[in-house]
Length: 164
Image (cartoon, rainbow, N blue to C red):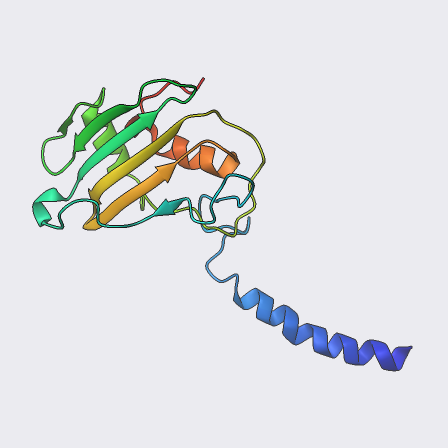
């Protein structure tokens, strides 16, 4: 028995070390930020980045937000321009711009390999397109699990819809 255990342990140590290498950059909780689930009705990459608007420097800080309250409600479309003096038809464009500028990477996609609490936050969905910090934005949001809810809540005044 002892002869079998020692070789198995010697093989297990390098394998565990290889697993640890894949975790670099993760926090103590095991995540690098907001997370995503691959549960039913959820793609493995809920947020994508593409170039939905012209790539001119004058477009930086301009966003279009489309909010669907779900359950047959009308989709609302808002604009936000943070390229100079905050402007747009969001209820409080200055608060939205200040909030977004205070976030390190507000439109980062959720990691596809994260485990999320299975709770439903509501039928609301949103699409945000435009440019931010020199990068194109095309972000799809929902409230289908704990990770998606946290991502939604993190964007605060950019998403003025009652989710109560």
